[in-house]
Amino acid sequence: MNKKLVSLALAVVFALSTAGLGFAAKVKCTVDTVVDDKVTMTCKKASKIKPGDKVKVSTKKKAAVEGC
Image (cartoon, rainbow, N blue to C red; front, side, top):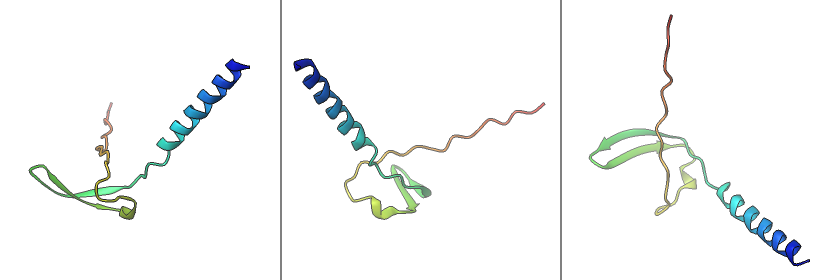
């Protein structure tokens, strides 16, 4: 009985912690200017971002073009 309760509790904690990761907003942006360490971007759905939010920025990967 005890093992079942512990297993259930761990499953609930795991489910709640992974569900929180799914709520991150995805916003597509275009870089306008880069000056020293400041970047200006134009974003669609920018209302999802608030001042002070931490954001992750990644560059678009270029695909290799191979020929014969």
